[in-house]
Length: 568
Image (cartoon, rainbow, N blue to C red; front, side, top):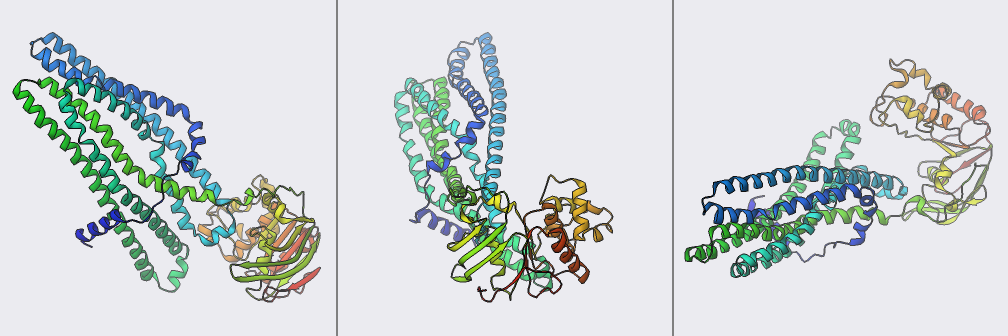
């Protein structure tokens, strides 16, 4: 695209009548607790900023005194003194400005870090259905949008308030110096307002567009990197690169549009400020030539005019620079409207253990697709239940309902005769271990991946869990033993080895219910025998639910349930 095309698109966005999200004070209000926590740094930084502002106020008038009185009177002694006073003011301003920036930077950083932490914590506590619709890369980009909130916790808002007082003070001094010239200068001020109104909608619209395209790009990159083995198998490197390139080009166009609008608005503000300066130069020059205005008075006037136009221009520019921040604020606040799993007021019951699981006429659907239909069954303490059936028949869905990953809307699921919808999810999941077919391991050591189910476990407990699961067979062959890094998603070890680590987690957790979801799919005959032995001996006093495509002949089962198209 050529500059002409970018300008044309930017102009279209500026003139767009599309309604954009407005600033909601309630959205900012939820961040007040963060400000309250660090209010001392904010207060001290604000105090120093006020001192810096007060120190700067007399400078233009001192300059007038030097030019009109000291220099005109050829008083070198007073000139030395006046210059020393100005130098002292500048040095004090420098020191105070440094500490102002320091305290506001600490204040800003601490709040942003806390917001990111709490947002991440909130996202993790959202229901699984939320993650079904939003991919990892997209969510990572949305968390990064918190950076856009920095302006709300910077010195900008304090500068805004101080600027109002500087404006009033400067206006009084300007009228005192030359009321006619002041009125001429004031006539320029409305132009700042109209310029801001002209650009504000376009900046807000394009800012939202850029943030969303960043999120989509992050999601696409995450997909490509997470599925790099599939990309290589199908020799799709070029195809993936072209796809990412198209997203980058799309983002580039929006970035350029945003830059064009910001540049236009910034330069227009500078032009209006310069126009005011030209008006003062014209009228002031005429008055100096006529002898009705002194050069010192002109220098002082322009100094205070800067404090009149400066805050006005700053307010106008901040009005524009706040638009991306407002967009980020609204987008970050969107997560607050999504209910967390534990926010359900009915989930108050803490269960000491699990000795009975009962489905009563449970029907469950993913959107329009029915996964379970009218399921009724009971599983008691010590039961060993095998659930078989083809892919998509509802086996894994049943397990997800037991874990409370999805909320039942039709029928009832009871745990210890308590409706699962009334049980605290953390209390429920603490009593269940899950060994999945698709094991996820963190990019950490084998030891820490086993410890994930019980972080406080001793080294002896970890070693014992590894031995019982069969993990020790391959761990002892590694140079670094338990301390070896498994790589991203466990890429450095095999699928069967990952399943053994997952089984070690279940052993270490020692919960009341152990669920094996195709846990034998990548195991050899010897490993399968070990799992069967674990179920019969180590887990003999626990509820064991085994999901498998096939019947397990050597396992002593309490009952076998076969699923076909969501029905038993």
